[in-house]
Structure formats: structure tokens, C-alpha cells
Amino acid sequence: MLDVSAVEAMLKTAFPEGTITVRDLTGTSDHFEATIVSARFDGVSRVERHRMVYGSLGTAMSGPIHALALRTLTPSEA
Image (cartoon, rainbow, N blue to C red; front, top):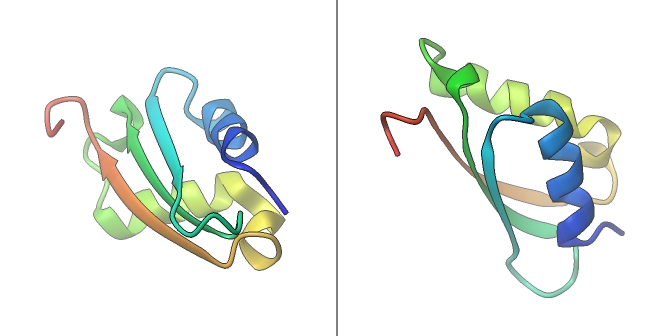
């Protein structure tokens, strides 16, 4: 299992300049919601943004994380 701080740390490694907020939606450490504001999303489609996030979480997406709701925004969109 991963806790909120572990998921945040993984995302901050991939998006060090970003603003990242992670919530545990169920209290079971396997359903999360993440909001990421990053300039790396400029000019990138929503699907590709989500792929970037999933890639940064690696094998956690096929193991400890059962569900992940995402909001991926550029600074101007935020």
C-alpha cells in the first residue's frame, strides 16, 4: 500500500516545478485523487498528460494504486 505522501513524492520527482495535491478518496490507500499544475503540460493533450502521470507512477499503477482520478492543468489553466 501507498499513502498520500508516497504518491506525492513520486509525482514531485516527475514534476518538480509543479504544484501537486493528492487525496486518499476512501481511506484505504488505494483510491486517490491528484491535481497537478505543471508547465510541462503546455501544448499537451489531456490523454498525453495522463500518460505522463501514469508513467511517473510506474508499477504502482498496476499494484498498490487501484484507482486514480486526475486533474492535470497548465499554470494558465489553473
